[in-house]
Picture 1: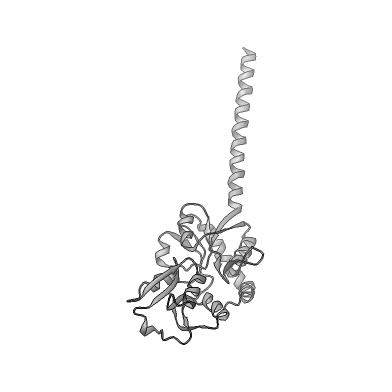
Picture 2: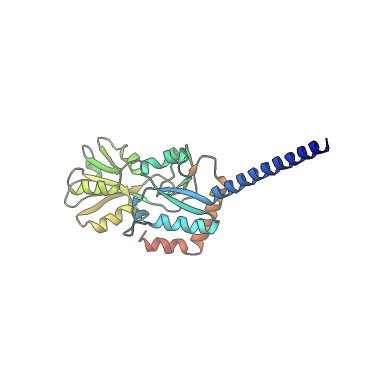
Length: 253
């Protein structure tokens, strides 16, 4: 009987140790998951996010999120996803956050939470030089926009305008230069960069984009504590001059 009781005691001790080990492994695994945040970016949007000559992610958003992660204490894994696929990827759990020059709008707030705005821009209208496109002659014209952007939503409110969405702004620029569309609607921080590179193009109108500015997006009601930490980090980066230093590097107005 003593042998049987000893054996049972040994087995109970072993099972208890095994359960504790499983619990400890789970805790370690959960901790590891919180250390790496997968951030979605559409890396075709210079100077905010793009692939550089060495085939590495670069841009204002890339450097800013790295500064934020260093301050808060998490690692960043950047995921290159088309802009119109970012929110679906977030909702599906493929990424943890979006930082891709995304404007915080009331419509988007229905499905995601945003940090404080970190950059404000406007809607810029671009045409080829020596053309007669104006705000008064939009009717019947073709306007190029990037798919899924605030600019696409704005363009669809214009009466009599045919909206021509593209996966990226460069495609719209090429369509404008070859006469396939009549003008482009893009956010000003991006548009001015393309104007510097294309002397045959010019701006002819600039309007508010109706958003609160670019913000980092997270799935709804899941990361309130992290959002608060990021907001504090943004305030500190703006106060200590690091934010302006990065913005100047990418010639942002």
